[in-house]
Image (cartoon, rainbow, N blue to C red; front, side, top):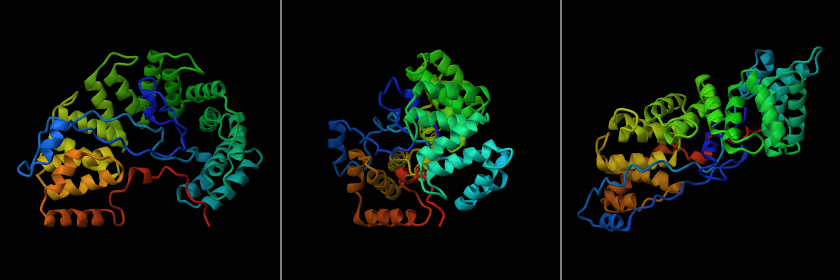
Length: 370
């Protein structure tokens, strides 16, 4: 089910992060290297420059995309939802339509129809139709439909924009135990507007959603703990929640947790574990992780020193728009044979299921089934 991304937890610190859940990701900002260090990097006799500027804090995310979209989880969707999970979208649509129009109608099937219309999966994409089916499911008390319709109203997707109405739907869905609704409600409380701004209430709601296992909430709550927003600053607790979100493959949490491990911020310093965590995120296409992993290979920190892999990971990050003069100078000083080896390594990695650009991670709606 669609949701606001955990990046929105930083709304008041970085205005403009509350973007619609279907907007595309932007390239990461270039890493800024101080001029004196940049000059040192170009000296051929200096094979590995200073580590001073290596582990900078992770830049604030500049989009509000979730990493994936999940189908409705109500067991009443049975065959229809099973088909949806297997990518058989037309079959899912047909089965859900039968159940939605049955006597009595099934709310979960209506929610699934809304999702299919919203995605354009198995049927022509129609946001108004998606909102209509969500609305019918809401009338039957389906908590996931409340979440979906709330997001539609918040964004004005297929229905009139109504932030206050969205907040009410989130509140009702959260009261019925929907973790993502609780998470989104916490985001609204941080931002203010349709609901009164209340950082402490937001932190409490985010903690509850995190305890229910919602990975975006775990990441967001970690950021609140790290920044001391609405709750007392607690680096150790922040690192713990980052580790939980990372265990659920939350890429932004992986990067933040890796930085915490490398710096020993809230967790025991462990450069090898940090490198492994950076690699997980890098292989999922995160440009920041690719950049940090490249630096680790350049220095031999947490991993064996490997200039070829350093150059290869730097190239992948650069192709996503993350330009690092520090690493460009390092890679440029390598022998031709090493640069050729790095190019071959990138070609090998990007074949099949190798590292991919973060913007290519499955955030777009699935294609309609033939």
